[in-house]
Amino acid sequence: MSKRDLRVSLVQGDTRWHDPAGNRDYYAGLMAPMHGNTDLIVLPETFTSGFSNDAIGNAETMDGPTIAWLREQAAKLDAAICGSVQLRTSEGVFNRMLFVRPDGGVEHYDKRHLFTYAGEHERYAAGQDRLIVEWRDWKICPLVCYDLRFPVFSRNRLDAHGEPEYDLLVYVANWPSARAYAWKTLLRARAIENICFVAGVNRCGKDGNGLHYSGDSAVLDFLGHPLSECADAELTTTTTLLAADLADWRAKFPALRDGDGFSLSGV
Image (cartoon, rainbow, N blue to C red; front, side, top):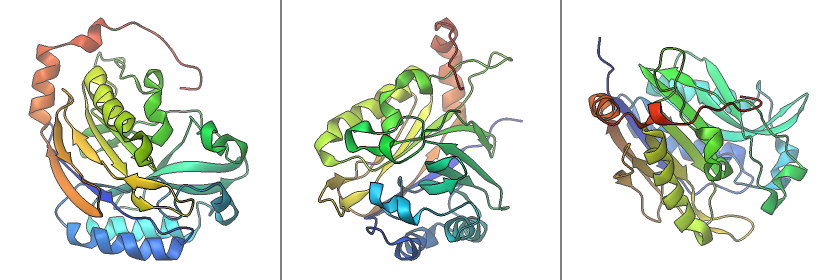
């Protein structure tokens, strides 16, 4: 049986500052029209608070209201939902990327590369292991913001069967407009070098620290070409990823098989 196509929805929102309940209501409203029209919904990084070291005091647990809300929304919309929030565990507070399925299943990836420029490493714990999620025939690698700058960690390798480990890279971010050129350039680079689709979701608007975010969320194909691009505004968009196109290009241009072998600690 051939792999089905995957509909991916980007939700580029103006996240409210330090307002988890308000953000849950806000993003629920943006997602509501997607019922029955998508397979995967991607929310920004720290979508309940904005990117803030001070939000650590309100970090939830895996039994908190945001996990319950994500499960409710995924079931209601019949789609998986992913995005990151601050989550407290016995090992510290993580910037945790959540992948929530309609049946209530939850998988997570903890942001490995903490943004020292903003002091994230001083208050949050760093993750170690990369995550590959299988969803509706697709293998997906979810990553968070600053991870985009570190290509070795995201490198698409071949598995024991000689197949690429993933088909889609997903990045969620709070990436200020002052560095927008890097965001747009690196998303394209990750798509090209890993021969995969890339979905990158950034927030828009201005946060409580006065930083402006220009959005620039996008879905890119395996050649780095944009399939959808978002302007500097609150908006949502849904793009269909064509499985046959990816398979055909990988068969025609097998660059992943010519790559250097390597291993990563903690992966």
